[in-house]
Image 1 (cartoon, rainbow, N blue to C red):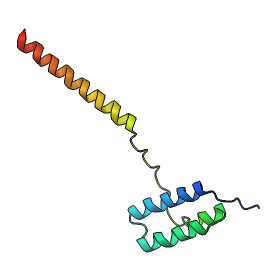
Image 2 (cartoon, helix red, strand yellow):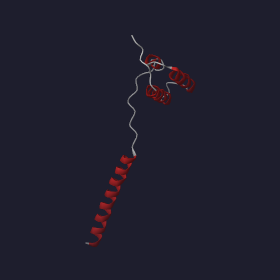
Image 3 (cartoon, one colour):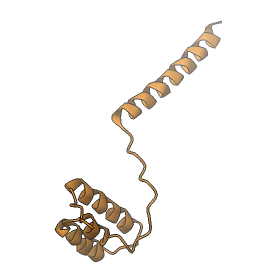
Image 4 (cartoon, helix red, strand yellow):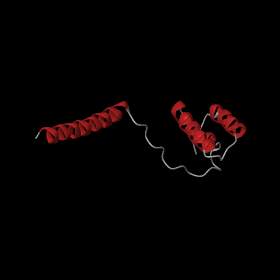
Length: 94
């Protein structure tokens, strides 16, 4: 079987997984450091797998909230406040 070369993106994906396992307490900082060294030295996907083979599968990471999502949420909150304010003013003067 032909070994498939690992890309920089493959390495970054494995390092991100190692970071999440470290945050979850499955790896110490020393273990994380050792495994990152293995990842950067890896030339093939099989060598990359060796860095995470003994770790359980992770749930997919939640996507970060984008600036556009925050903008939409802020607009929605301001619209609700404006309607509440207009309703209050309307009830006071009628």
